[in-house]
Structures are given as C-alpha cells and as structure tokens.
Image (cartoon, rainbow, N blue to C red):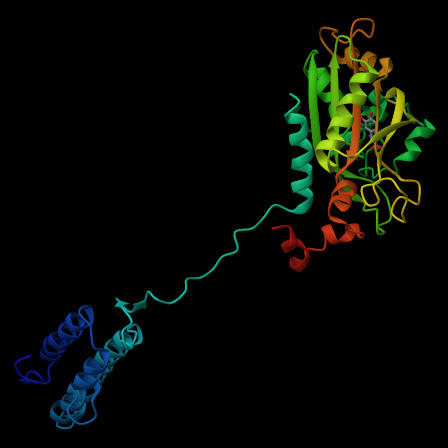
Length: 364
Ligand code: DAH
C-alpha cells in the first residue's frame, strides 16, 4: 500500500463507492494471502494507526451531515469484511501448519461405522453353514395369507394345531375367502410352499426372516422374532440325511464336541416330526441349571415333508412335480434369538431390541 487510505475527493455516492471499492479489494487480496492474522488486524483495526481509524478521522469526522449515512453504511460493510476475514483465520500458533484457516493437525470427526446387529450376525452365520452345503436363500413376505401360513402346511381351518401359533391377523378381512385372509406370518415355513410352487425339485433352500406371534413379552419370548427355516427336496432324501445335516450344522454353530439327539414330536407339515436337542454347551452334558440338569437343550424342530404338503403344492402348480412316490424331503426350523442367546450367554431376549448401545457395542 503506497498510502494508508485513498484521498477522498468528494462525498457523492459514486466517489464513495470507488474509494471503498479500492479498500475492499485490498482487504480481499490480503485475506487471500493471510499468513499473519494479527498483523492484518492491527493494520486495519488498530486503534491508533489502523486504516479504519484513519478513515474515521479523515472522512467521517469532516463529512457533511447528508453524507454521514451513505459513508457510515460503507464503513460498516468494510469493517464486517475485515472481521469476517479474521473470524475464519486460525491464529498461527507456534509451529502448527495452518492451511487457509484450517488447522490440519486437529483430530478429524470420528464417525462410528456401524456394525451388524448381533441377531443379524447369528442369522447370517446359520445361513452360511447351509450355503456351504449347497443351499441357497429364499425369502417371502411378512404379511402372509392364511393359505401359505397354515392351510398348505396341513393346518386345516379350525384345526387345533393352529392354537400352537397364536396369530396376529390383519383387521377387516372377514368378507374374504378364509384362505385369502391376511395375517402376520407366524413362522418362515410358508416360504417352503411359495418356493416349491415356483420351482420343481431338486431344492435346497434356507429361509431367514422375521415372524410375529401374539405372545406376551418375557425374558425368553418376544411377539416379533426371527427364524431360519430349511428345506431339502430331491429323490431318495431320508431321515438319515436330515440327521446328518442337522448334526453337522449344530457342530458348525456350537463346536465339534456338541452332540445331537432327535425326539419324536409333532408338526402338521412333517411326518415323522422331531425335536432336536443338543448336549448342553454350558456343562458339556453333565447337567446344570441352564439345561435343567438334563444335560440336553432343545433347539429346533424338523421332520420329513408330509405328503399332504406336496399335494397342496402340486395343486397350485401348472405342472405337478412333487409326487411323493418319486420324491421326498426334509424340513427344519430354528429360532435365531434362542441360538444367539446361547452363543453369547444372554438371558433376556429384550436386550436385542432395546437399542442400548452399551449392549450392542459388545458385538462389534
Ligand atoms: N414352523 C415351526 C415353528 O415355527 C418350526 C418348524 C418345525 C419348521 C419343523 C420346520 C419343521 O420346517 O420341519 O414352530
């Protein structure tokens, strides 16, 4: 700068504009190359020799009354420009590299990347065990019809077996035919039916998903929970295949020392049906509180696909493909929450849904 401030020739607006524009350009140029904010501050705002003080002395004090307002407005704009430049400048503290007012030595904003929910993790683990055996994944809707959820799975209307799955039904369906009425699926088994109607055998599928029941929440129950279903249909599929497959899956999930045993049970869509128990993973089968001193823990349901299910499927297919004289299959279904609780020693199912980060972060 050759002189501290330009000489003001007159107080008309265009002269004021021109004179202040010169000053604004200087502020802008100095801001762009600002290496010493304190020197910049002193040069413009210094109380004795700062240029604003000089402008105030030379221009404002001798201004005619009608010029005070236009002069004052421009003066304030210039002052704001200088202050804004100082605000965005970070003082050049000892030795810190400053780039355009940003201190690049400060730690960045840390964003937690997020982790899979423990239930999803367990669900994925189960699915992956079966993917390694050549199964693929099928999914279906959570809002299901009575036909897929019950009727085709050999639960006839009003059959007492329906009482085992206290069902949440969608309101306002009374005028529809019974099999078309909508409900929240109570298990993932309806996806067996959907897949078999869509595809002929051979079939090896796992079905992970959310299911709903009208159950009161307690430490081991939730009205919304998750299951993984499995279905294998081909020629010559036997109960031995079912046992071998599930024994392998339980060892893959809980460790190779785990034993399995099969107990007779009942499900309408399998015949024979079985409950699978594994040797207690907490006491290695010796007997403890967790296994009620039996050494065994019941974990899932399974069985050979009932011929009535194949018949219901073929009745819906353009070309029948599920003749029980030629093909057979097995199915199984397990609760994801129950398995995740066993894996991690969790005693309250509600923890999965509470959204408490202190709980969830343990699974990162
Ligand atoms: N759908 C049954 C339930 O939710 C579980 C189940 C049992 C599935 C046996 C199966 C099976 O595929 O064969 O209680």
